[in-house]
Image (cartoon, rainbow, N blue to C red; front, side):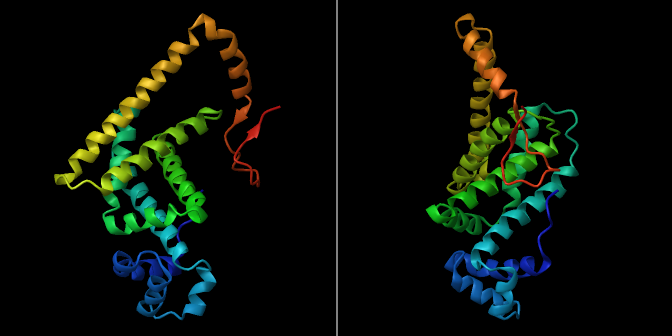
Amino acid sequence: MRRPIDPKILELMLAALPNVAFDGWSNSTFVAACKEADISEEKARLFCPRGALDLAVAFHKWGNEQFETAFKAKDISQLKVREKIRKAVELRIVLASDKEAVRRGVVLFSLPVYAFEGSRLIWDTSDLIWELIGDNSEDYNWYSKRTILSAVYGSTVLYWLGDNSEGSEETWHFLDRRIEDVMRFEKAKVQLKTNKLANNFNGITRNFLKKIKRPDKNVDTNLPGYLDT
């Protein structure tokens, strides 16, 4: 269960947005947001100890919340999985309407010290998309689906940031090509399973992969998953 954004953090993040285009997700933006929201910097750091970094994270999570609400209102029952994925990725990007805030976030999370944080946010968005379209994976597929979608989503966002076409039309063409690449990869996996030369190796690999389970939400652990022994 994802925790909703703390209202105090959301207020501060919204106050920061007008300055992000000029100063990025920086300390200057954080200080300006505190003044705009009429909150002392000392008090603000009680719930945003990392300053502007916490606001950048909140901006991404806020986008996820908006996306989840909007996507749940759509009827996707008759769509194929690839169509659901396509619609979800497009909607998530469209709702991130403040392109400059996203661009500044990409710059921030590309820094080595914050790269893990940025990867985690993309993973969380991919996880949310799979949950919303009804993914029930319990084994290693839970990981592979999210890994592949994270790559598709991340690359599409980067393309979108540089796309000046009307209605971001070129971005959606790019997204279609990335999804098509994934479908070709999935077909290759199926063909490999039927290849006699690779059958023994595949059997050993599958036996190991079957032991990998999705994270148990009922277990309090820092591990990303567990092995079923």
